[in-house]
Image (cartoon, rainbow, N blue to C red):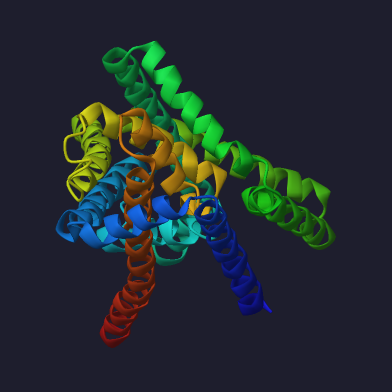
Length: 341
């Protein structure tokens, strides 16, 4: 039954993505289709492949930053288990939004004995810092482009994505995890009350909430504050570099300024909120932005599809290999411990 549900989730997500791509493709003229296919054939894939490698380096930084946040709570998880948890997070987020965040916390609980509520708290703080960084990206765009130019690009973004945000399947996937969590928590509460009584449940819940809030504010107790700041800045600079490197894949986009990559980074981050992993919509977001910088629509869409395809493939492979290595490494460690005993 569990495997069946997972298959259904994957099929729904893939169906959404494929459906969106087909819909946009059918709305293109024959000339635009031919130009898009030509762009795929002409692309310099050396630069396209460099981008996910940069993303991998960014995940190394995110892993270390998360470990720094856990140390004030009394936990210093092994680096590779933490790294694999981060990689698996992105993998599961491709299928159902926010499922990856829950998954990476449960992985750390299983392999590093970090309570889920504590790692969830640090995850909330981590996302807060990411939002702050995204805010700095937005301010930088306004300073470099000016409000009038930015409003023009945003209008293009709104026009191309207005038909997606209200999609029924997109909405279902967006709220699938919250609904599942509510149902799961409700079922757990009923079970716990029957077994231990209502007062014990209250004590249990309050202790978990207290632990969660302690972990959220634990960032102020990080000893390596300079390292934390450097990792955060480096992380977002690498994200920006990922977009900029992709421009070199096509001669029509190689001349684009760095501010265009900032705009792609900003709106690309919003795209993953609309559909799991930006499936289907990410190429359209890139198209909307690059059109605003004078790139032909078919070329802009082609580059967006190339970027999304390679990044998604990288996340899929990274997640699958991380699941394999996570089990292999920990099996070896368990075997070594058993031999010592």
